[in-house]
Structure formats: structure tokens, C-alpha cells
Length: 174
Image 1 (tube, rainbow, N blue to C red):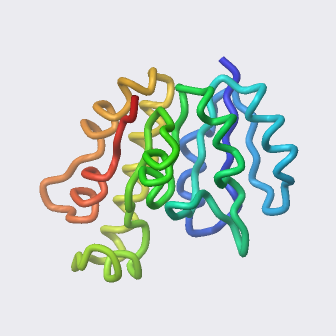
Image 2: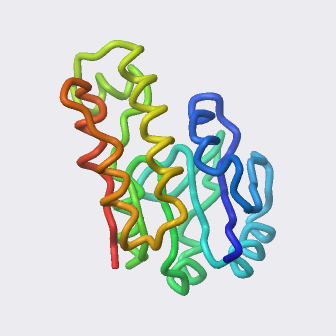
């Protein structure tokens, strides 16, 4: 299976590099990669893993969307996809895309205050980020239909409210 990872460089999402470290894949981290090149890489890939920051309109990097509605015609052809950015689930629902997706994922203190009113420490955020990346890495080899159960099994906590919030925002769309 030919895997493509699109993970724009951003120090606040660097913890996600663990997801693809050690797996056979093509990684795009460039902030200036062209949409034409991305479309070509997506066409030739069996699985695409999107990681980073985003909103219901797509995955973005500084000042621009790197993945947006102009990619939907390609993404609809694929079923073995992983969309991990804030509100990726809304992007997936809007365009009828299949695979694993995330809703709002709290990955820093500011987000914990803005989106979930979670009272937490920086250590709890760091633990959540690292545990999420580890759980996703351990599930990434599975068919997407099995990934969410594996992630939720490994990414859980009795005491970390950030993990509990984020765990509820991981979905499978078929």
C-alpha cells in the first residue's frame, strides 16, 4: 500500500510526527507545496494521512488552505483515508468523504479554554498529545474501519479531561 502523509510544518503539531516515523511513506511537510503536486501525489497513493491544523473548510498552514474543497473529487475516490485536524469531521460530512476523522481536538492550553472549558495543566496537554500520537501510530496499519476502536482503546484516561474530551471526537465515516 502506498501511503502519503501531508503534515505541514508547525511546531505545535510536531508531536504528530510519531504517527509516521518508521513507516514506509511519502511525507510532505512543506509550507509552500503546490496544490498541483499534492493532487498528483494523492492520485498515486492508496492511503493519505492528513495531520495538522484546520477547520471545516480544510487543512491549513500559515495563511492558506493546503487541502480544501478543490481536492474533494480526488478524496471521494479513496476510502482508506485519515483526516486529523480540528473539525475535519465537518469537512468529511460536508463532502461525503470516507475514513477516520477528528472533530475538535484540544492540543494546547488556549484551545482547552476556547473550545472545551477544560481546566487542565500543560503537563496534561502534553500527555494527551503524546498518548494520542502513540495510539494513532499503533492503529495506522489497520483498515480505517478498525482504527477508531483501537485508538479509543489505547487513548483513554480516568483522570485526564483533555484525553476524555478528545477521545469523543474521533470518528469513522463509511
